[in-house]
Image (cartoon, rainbow, N blue to C red; front, side, top):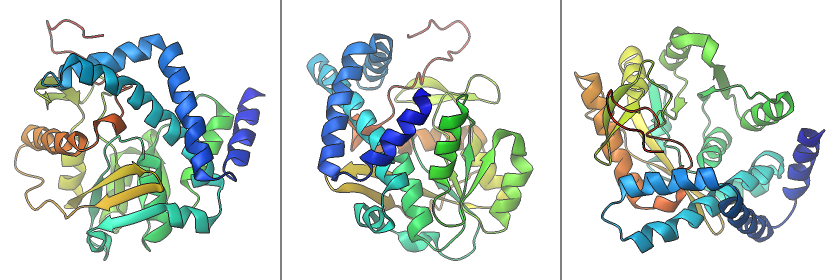
Length: 288
């Protein structure tokens, strides 16, 4: 029942002016910051590890901003998935090397976990005339699962692969010219992960960006989405001409290094609520 009410609320919210949605997100962000104490500690631990060069006051000031951007982005799904197509197109601005997404060459899109990740996917599937694919994790709540799946399938010929579809299916789509919108910068546990530096700290990282690029002989095009006052800027960057290399671990370390450069431009918009360092190297103490 609560899930149905939540979806209905998001449908109604999608009709309101963006300023109202963002204001509600600001309030919700502060509520989450005050109430969800364990996750607040996760954010603090992540920032302490990754930004030791910031003062304690700077890191502390970032924490509520992380929650505010997280909440605002979550509520923005109301208009991303239920607003008119004209409103969505006006609020999502594609910039940069958009031509890098043209043609039929196999392409893996490196889409880091900034809060605007759904806005980036929506912009590409709505505004770029090409079929895109991504990997989708089923939600335990079936109502929420159906809502998210429908929202991410709203525009274009986007395909959402489940974990059960396997690598071969995804690679076949890549080779057929369907770009893969890949978000590999999270801790998915020790299975198939390797430890590479992330802000100088060993982080369990799935080397999927290098793996898919190798298997499909694909280029890698970074797409970074930034929340703005008027919506989102979705920046398409030139394809990396030195990726993948000959070493999967070196590739993954390079991915993290370049990701750091993206994060440094907008640290409050990265997904610090995730336990990025939950998996530790043998013998290393936990950080949370």
